[in-house]
Length: 210
Image 1 (cartoon, rainbow, N blue to C red):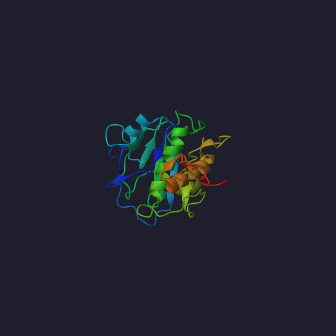
Image 2: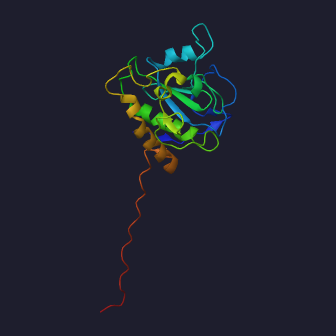
Image 3: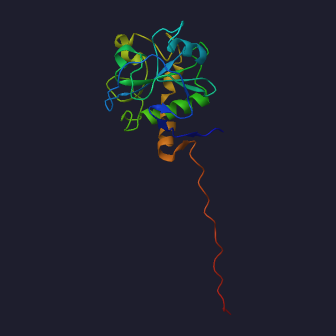
C-alpha cells in the first residue's frame, strides 16, 4: 500500500508535484479562505492540463491542483493565489480537479482519495487557509465542498457529479477524504504508521529463594 505523507511547500509550490504555470489571478485572501472545492474533469489529466495552461487550447480556467487516477498530481496555481474555477468561489476556495475518464459516475480511485486528502490537509493549515476540515454543502460553511453547492453564483454546475446522476458517487466520497486528511494531520501520513511494539521483558527471578 502506498503511503501519502504530509505535503511540504516551497514558495507556494508543493514539493514532489509537477508544476505547470496556469491561468491565475491575484492573492487569495488568506486566512479568509472558506475551503477546498473538489471538481471532476469529465476527462483526464492531460486534456485538463492543456485547457488550464496558456497556449492554443487554453480556455482561461484553472484550478490549484489536478489528480489523475494513478495519483499523479499537477499543480497549476501556487498556494495563496486565486485560480479561475467557479466564479464567485474563486476568491474564497482552493480547487482540485480530478480525472474521471469522461464519466463523473466513475468513483475516485484509492490514490485520488488520498491525494485529495493530502491537498485538503495542506490547504486547511493556518498558513494557507485556516479552515475546518469537514464536509460542507454551503458556500457559507467552511470545509470540503462541491462546485454544485454554489448554484448560479458558482456557474450552475452539477460538478463533481453527473447531471441528474443517480449515485452522486464523487460528492459522497468527501467524508472519506476528510477522514484521511485528519489522519494525515495527526500522524503525518495516511495510512497511519503501525504502532511500534513494546519489547516484553522477562520477569526478574527471585535469586536466593528456597
